[in-house]
Amino acid sequence: MRLLQIIMPVLRNYYIAMTVLLQQLFRRSSPLPVLPQRNGKVAIVTGGARGIGFHTAKHLARLGMHVIIVGNNESDGRQAVTRIQQDTLHEKVEFLFCDLASMKSIRNCVRNFKAKNLDLHVLVNNAGVMLEPEGKTEDGFEKHFGINYLSHFLLTRLLLDTLRKSGTNYFNARVVTVSSATHFTGKVNLEDLQSSHCYSSHGAYAQSKLALVLFTYHLQHLLTVDGSYVTANVVDPGVVNTDLYKNLCYLGSFLKWMTGWLLLKSAEEGASTSIYSSVSPDLEGIGGCYLYNGERIKSADVSYNIELQKKLWTESCKMAVLPVSS
Image (spheres, rainbow, N blue to C red):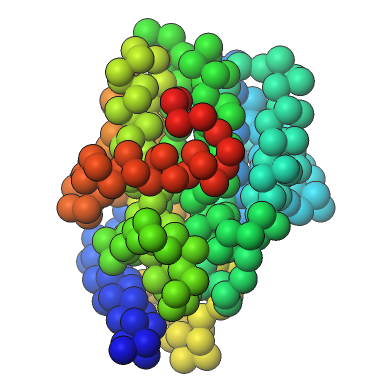
């Protein structure tokens, strides 16, 4: 039984991955439409030093936004800032240190951002880890759940007041969260959110990505109820050729090396839906959506379970030591 509990998430995840890969092979991403300039608007992108996050930050800077890259590697962050400034000829790009594996670091990062007295119009929750060996964050949370999900839950909650103040009836502030098609295979076990009973890196990763969808939908509900000019959407970048695959098994790494150029999206292609969701006029005032290739599609059936959304929100507040209210 224990072996089956470990193997089944692996099989489910690889089935979803192969399905998405075949879709990508026969239907490449549509190019981004021409997007309006957003001069003077402010965006935060977690994990903006590399991969999808880097290309998201770069495109937002090209649109005139003041972009703040959040990451846990000072050297990579500074290099990314320099590259974006050079490529876009836009100076308002900066780096803020934040270790998403540490709640203390997240709170310090938010304090440092708020000390700048800036508005915040777009928050892109992009950073993440995948298929990590079993391990804990600084605060004792399972890595996938803690870094992919709970860190962004905390970061978003701490920045909500600034987002609310920055949004207007003609330009809503936006929370854009990067999930994955693997959320379709995920199960949120409220009795074992830390995957301590029977650890599977594939199952833990899928759970964290489903949790992000549930969180986004409940956040949008709360924002709608209180009339905030803030929207929350979740995006699926597809299967993208990034460093996230460093923990694949030998066979998986070999197959990626052999076929990645044909089947996997580039990081720039993978960033397109995040960029679209961040600034497109088509989504002005529209939240609670799951987007893939710039289109609204249906997420997993369980993600619409309102009771599960509420329970996960409540448990997350307890873990992050936050009041349950938004």
